[in-house]
Image 1 (cartoon, one colour):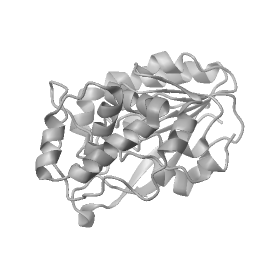
Image 2 (image 1 turned 45 degrees about the vertical axis):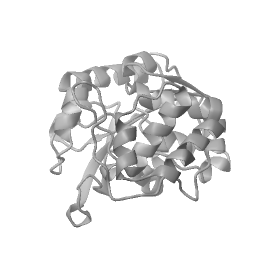
Image 3 (image 1 turned 90 degrees about the horizontal axis):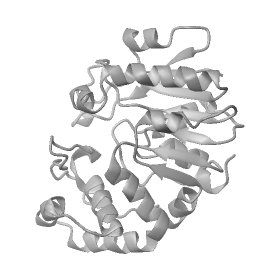
Image 4 (image 1 turned 180 degrees about the vertical axis):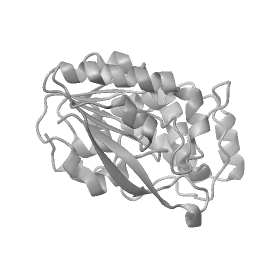
Length: 273
């Protein structure tokens, strides 16, 4: 399913809960043969870019994120040009002016999201109750990176259908032989995860139960399922049964503001194959 390009292509965004560590240390979890790829919580798309599937259905409830992917797919050169415009003007004043701005074109909006993502505090994407991005400027000043390859990103995204929608809409399309990778916001406290309060506004426990039901239905239709989630008794109870195999994965936590506070944490990998 993969190409040589997918072996080197990396996400262009940093996202809370990103799965670069999963690719680096647990790539053996991914199936080698499947029909279509489904990912309903896209985020930075680390797993999608790594696998580079022939056909994918990608979604996220973050509309600005999906529009950013669409803009790069449709006109990566103009997004790149606008991002370099931000690079030349980058400063504290420019950061906050950009954060407050409301670009009208898809490429300008995409460049804004990428610029803020790369220069905000800890690469977080957080909005207030009005849906306005409110993360302060961080310490990193790199706006473009040596390994940026928006042309390759665009080529891979042309093989995908992108949508901003609830996960059930995406999962309902998966059929026998398809592969589903699911990485929802974590909404239970584990390993002193301080980001859970923010996630609870976006993805509640009732959503976790809806997700478990949707994945059981997809599994019964013959889809291959890999779910990464919090390592907790509550999550384990949702996936009790002979159809699911649970494996504890250990990784370094990246959410703490100080590197000295970033300790080992555990997550669950839940599969049906």
